[in-house]
Every structure is written in C-alpha cells, then in structure tokens.
Image (cartoon, rainbow, N blue to C red; front, side, top):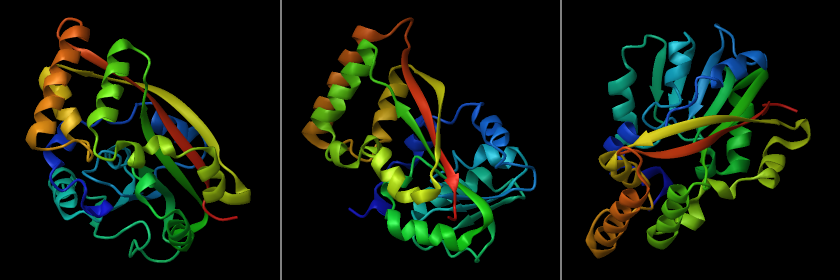
Amino acid sequence: MKNTERFSTRVENYVKYRPHYPDTLLPFLKEAGVLHPETIVADIGAGTGISASPFLENGNEVYAVEPNAEMREKMVDLLSPYQNFKAIAGTAEHTTLPDNSIDLIIAGQAFHWFDPAASKIEFERIGKPGSYIALIWNVRQVESPFEKAYEVLLRKYGTDYKEVNHKNIGEAQMNSFFGPQGYKLKSLNHLQLFDLKGIKGRLMSASYAPLHGPEHDAMMRELEEIYEKNNENGMVKFHFHTEIYLGPTHA
C-alpha cells in the first residue's frame, strides 16, 4: 500500500480518536519568534486538519497540503468555515505551493512518511527567507501498566508497526534533514483519556491495525482484556510527550 493511501479507510476513527496537540504548542512557537498573527503557515501531510486547527484559530492563513483524498475531503468538511484555510492536493515532495510563499512549515505526525531529501528541497523552495520548519509528533509514552500492555499488543498484531513507527525518527535523521543550521528540540506534556469504545477507535485509527479477519478479532479481544485490567473508573490514559523539532528552512 502506498503511504499516501494508508489512512483511506481510517478517516472517521482518525478524526474522533487521534490526539490533538497541547495548548502550550502555539505559545512555544510564539516565544521562539516563529509565529505571529501575520505568519503564513503550510501544514504538510495535514490529514484531517488536527494540526492545522490551532493555527486557524490563531488567525493564521493556513495552506493544508494532503495527498490522501479521503482525509482531505474530511478536512475540508471540518475546516471550511475558516476563511483563512485552503486545502491543497499535494505531497511533501511536491506541494504545488508558490516559491517563497510560506513563513512557517509544519508537519504534525507526518514527517516519517516523507522522503526527507526531496521534501527538504521542496521546503526550501516554498519557504520565504527567514522561514522555519516545525516537525511535530505526539510521542506515546510506554510507562504505565496499561501503556506497556498496549505497546505489546501493537507489536504482536500491527502488520508493519515496527517499520512505520515514527519512533524510528531520531537525532541522526534530524541532523541530516536540518543540516548545519541545526534545530532545537522542545518537549511538551500531553494526556488523552479513553473509555472502551474510545480505545478501540484509537487502535483502529492506526494504519497497521488489521481491519478484518481472525487477527483483528483476536487483537480486539486482547484489547478488551487490557482495558478491563487497567481502567480506572472506566477510563484509561495515554501520556504523550509532544516533541517539536524546530529549525530554519534555509542554511
């Protein structure tokens, strides 16, 4: 399956159950001097608009680039009331945006799907002089008994979980991408609570979770067992570190 098609059957669960970003994200970008009211933002791999929403609410003009038609259509449904929003059918390697048009390029939960070398060339083309890139992930922690059991479940049933896991991105990849101009890494704390329906939806929003068949059925039975053992007052918790890799677009 092409990376750009992986989430075509996951849209509704993605919208309902994927984590948003902490309220401290935009204040950090403002304090870093890269986000102002007039900042023009390109959200690359924008999905259903989760990462674009805070910037739209902040009043920024946002160009949301998303190659997956189903994800993009849902994003348009959700975000079209914002006059400062525009959806773009494009990829990280070919955004179709004009040269030197963007002040801040963001990618929320998406960079690990990109071709790093080709996307860097494209970002340098669309970025204005003095522009910045912010690569953002909600990194799920594996510390509590529930989180540890959930991780074991993913490794057992996820079809290619180990290969596509964004945790494969680290210092070496970031050094290569940003180059000699470097980057700064900021980590923010975040939390997500789920009941049983929610934890099932969260799992099914993942592109590596089997949708049908014996593997799916066994996976869901084990998920129910994990929930029953670990819920508190009917809820389980995901803890996240929201990691932001922030650096200049140009050397």
